[in-house]
Length: 146
Length: 146
DNA sequence: GATGAAACTCTGCCGCC
DNA sequence: GGCGGCAGAGTTTCATC
Image (cartoon, rainbow over all chains, first blue to last red; front, side, top):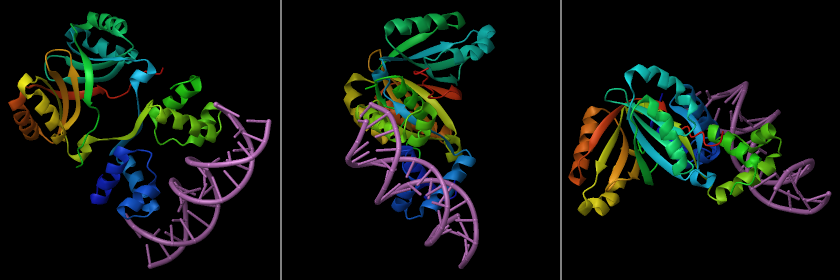
C-alpha cells in the first residue's frame, strides 16, 4: 500500500515513463536508488503497481480503425459470451456497465472490412451498436495523482 | 517502422513488460543486447513505440468508481470544451466518435459523489449519459501482434 | 526504512565483420 | 545489420545505523 508522498512521487514518475531507472527517480525525489527499489518492490507486491506496459501505435502496425461497440448480451448467451471473449484479439477493452448485461467494448481493427467481420461475429450474442473512433483526444492518461 | 518478425517479438515482450532489459529480451529471441537496443531505438524514433507506462490500481489509490460518459457536445461549445478537457483530471480516456460532436469519455473517480460532481461540470456542454463500470473484463490488452 | 559499499547486470558506444 | 568488448551507469543485496 501507499505510505507517503514519496510513494506518490515514485508512482508519478513510473506512470509517465515506466523505464525510468531507480537511480534517476531517486535523484529527482531525493532518495537513494536502493530505497526507491525497495519501495517499488513493495508497491508491486501490494498490487498498487499492476503492470509495466508499452504503448504501441496501432496505426503503424496496420490497425487503422478503432471503434466502441455497445451491446446488451442476451441473458441466455451471457456466460457463453464471457467464455468466448478471449477469442477476440481485436478487443482491447471490455467493460461490463450498468444496464441489463450491458457491455462497452473497444476494438482495434485493420480496416472497415475487418470491423464488419468483428461485428458479424458479435451479432449472435446481442445487438451491437457501433461508433467508430475518429480521434483519441485523451488516451489512458489517468491523472489520478496530481 | 517495423522491419521483420524480430521487431514484432521485441514489441511483444515490451508490451507485456516494459521494464524488461534489452539483454533479457535478446536472450529470449536470440539477439545480442546491443542489437535489441538499436532496434528499440529505431522503433521509438519512428513512433511505433509511443510510451512506456505503468498501470496503477486505481482502487488502491482511493478511486473506486469508473464510468463511461457518452455525450454530444453542443456545437457552439465544441471548441471551448476541447480546450477545457485538460482541466478534468478525472478523464482517463476521451474519444471523438462518429455522430454529431459525439464523445465517449471514461472517467475514474473516488465515489459516486465525485462522479456526480464530474457530471455536473460536464452538463453545461451537452447532455451526458452515464454508464457506471461494474467490472473491467478486458483492460488495455491489445493483442494486435498475435 | 534509509544508507552506502560490493557484486553483479545492463546500456551505449565502438570498431569490426 | 549484427556482434563482442569495454566503460560507465544501474540494480540488487546486505550489513549498519
